[in-house]
Image (cartoon, rainbow over all chains, first blue to last red; front, side, top):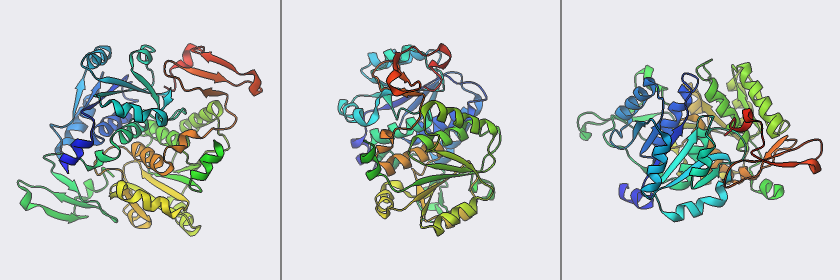
Length: 209
Length: 209
């Protein structure tokens, strides 16, 4: 499965989130981080990140795997990250409601087969970003959510294959289920798995639903 | 375009968001509302909504159109909404990381051609929801974001056609652009449109980007 996954993946996708207004954006920032992790990106670059968010990601990585597969990197200078990315042969896709329609551009972008840096903004994005990006892409031309835009973009890029990815070293793993919750808890070694249907401590049961 | 859009749309999609923890969830709740609006849903049902969120939606509807095409409805009893939906021949899809994979189920769901109520939770979802829903669907089995899950689900249901929808009575309309921002401001009648490239007041320029 892992091999099939890699063959259908572009070489590498990173996310750059510009702007974060402390407190007010904490929850949405966490969502942006977790979407990046869950949907096939390898790294999210951010400025001004609250410690809480790093802690949340650490907890998720420990519980659901992927400590060495996805990371949050704090940066000082978003412009430098963006320019370095381009110098190294990657392309930069800025998601904005003002851009060209995703439906028209996705095939072209995938056809390039290049490393992709996806740029999203909290609310304010400097005008420069529009000109430094290789593509300004609209996930619809109505205001909604950079989290939604990022999710749809990654789903389109990976064609749903991001959901086949398994993270390594997880303590808990979900077995998809038509009803209720089916979670395997991994202990020291895989052979000691126990298949627990609704056996999680009450406190954890709904936490990530 | 509108006609083509309607032919590819299921009859009707509504969103039910369960749970909202005041203050902490304000921003993510706003995102859920705007995603529902922008991605083809007709209504979002919610409990305990802050006035700020209704105001934000009113502002967006006034500016970008759709006052009569999308609404936020405050409800007391989510269970009643869900049951009434089913009694009226609609199906209920609960989005949860514990559910059956979207990649496996989307074709079947679309094939039903029924009205869809999409249920998402803030964090806590009562166990009952898993059993009242017709489908529990996982947008990946990793924790991320109900906003992202909703967005991907609607994008898959509408196959991207939700982005072709035009909202009525908008004051401003974006003309997709490869660089910068191209916004038409509609005055009393359409003939008086003026095509403004970066001519919005500074205050508004980046607001919805």
